[in-house]
Image (tube, rainbow, N blue to C red; front, top):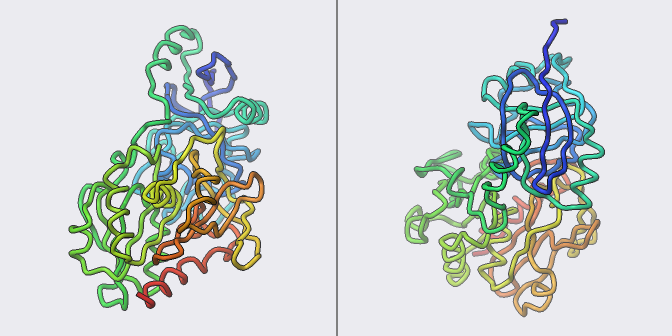
Length: 367
């Protein structure tokens, strides 16, 4: 086993609180909103998930890297988080199917990582005080300078980030001879969502975040999809306008995560920033239509207003989060539209939420 030198590092929160750790490999500094993920596995998918763009991710699991990385376990072409924080970092891995160590993966994409952190204390602090901006750095003797730089980092509330992660050009996924066609709006779409749609005999054209209805409808789709993504949903005016037009024309529409929030905003339901969000692969959700529970993967720092949703004459709440009763799914009573706040493609259950892709196809058949 090789010897790896670790440099002293700090986690400086925007309220001035400091936690200590050591860097993995390189020295450096990274800024972003600090948040935590409660999954014991899935670190590679989290690191490459566009919904995490610009965030400093704290892993609550005790060991990170112990099963290595695999070339197929990525959700985009790049690292999306701003920095990674963990307790114990495993330089070696034991999974035969792995292609490389987590260290090699992070080095390839130049991601700054801090380990040897008291993550239990850090996560407890975030839970009590809320997600906030932070900086991780090996500049342990430059606290005042880091504070000044951190003060200039914009807050997540009001921040539009979909344009940072969306495709620049439209592209196709699936078999062009498939039975159904879907136009998907890319606000930070995960690859596994596209795989799941393609498995349902769907040919998908993925459009940039600011695509118009006319552009998406020119594909002659049987249905529309609004994807997940990072940031505050309220600044996404073009996506909200697009969604309103899809709804007005009563076209089949499915939204996941940020797409769920966009559908709510298109119906006049407001969103708000949560205290610390939902991020993990173990979140319990109840389907109010079937009465069944689902173990879900979630990643969101914003939610839709429950009171406004309950009072909306054309909206029915279909799913609720059992930990805090936030809205986890909805459908329109008079339109062919539904959405969920969680990620069915992540399959933590593992098959608890697969039916949602079937439901979308069934809705398309009824159009």
